Length: 492
Image (cartoon, rainbow, N blue to C red):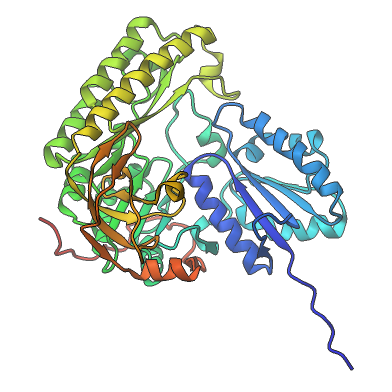
């Protein structure tokens, strides 16, 4: 008698839109689905379950979602049993509107109940009807959920979720909720779990990362966390994103400068250089404070690469206001900048403000800003020609690498470098080389490698292994004083 043939596992694919927090949430979604018995769909194959992890911040986010759902409809029609799930910030905001506009969607879930996805898929299949479940507050901290990581050599580690700020252009607090901080021990345990699997670099992640500790009333908690994370043996690089100038303190600068593993890279959102615009944005700082932070960072770490976010055309922005932004850019000399043209976000105070600017005015200012920043980035990059750099070899960072016989990697300062390929060099390995050419958005090193160190991350990358974390099951943050961090002996 023949043995029954087992049915193949249902397959899934997660598509991610938006910020690093969404990227990390998608790692959790993949981990949850694999724990529930699903398997990642092979490249080019149609998946049995497609999950769209959405963003509500980027311009035309809703049009993009419904456009993608429209493209998926004929695919689903041709594949009976296929399911489509929509999660993330736009799902939290639009809720049942998604199923009304796209009735072929099977599941809608929000930012607070990521862990419900497998059960909602099962329920939708059983009941043969769409399931919309949006929680109003965080059900479980994301760290308690399993994660399938995207990289063998670097990993995101969430230290908090939500935000307590009230910036008038931002809808994130309404969709992600108030700030919730993880306990230090949970964070360090997750970092250790990644390092144990060969990861060399972690990025500490939060909507307002340097406000960490507000929930247990410890203003020095983030600096302490940087030092403790940097002391973990085998961890070579620590980064963090994104801080807020209002909460940025000198003890964080000291921790960056004194902890060898912490990279001298700082992403510090400016948004505007005009004090009047900053006031209307409700940012909580002014130009002088911002530039003071930049000056103190550079005094402690002259090699620091500082990047930023800037919004052009905020309601009521005058030509004088915009010139103030250009002046801050000239003085700060950012390594690079993420620049955005202001557009209304329904549900934000700024959407109702007087003084909404015409599109052509915003576009013209935007082009002036990007031209200035590109020139500064190019000038700063040219200063690095001839300098030796240590690179963590990356995967998929250079679209033209194969044609040009190159690989790509990131310096400790976060800059992207395309370098001459050499036998045996793998993503996750560490190489040293010298910069030979500069462009505004990348560097080139076309000489022979100065050194090549094979790593456990490179071994994992070569074998196709990516870290998995089962979830640090220590629950939600507790009220009270957190456990003490380890006593550190590292530093300058």
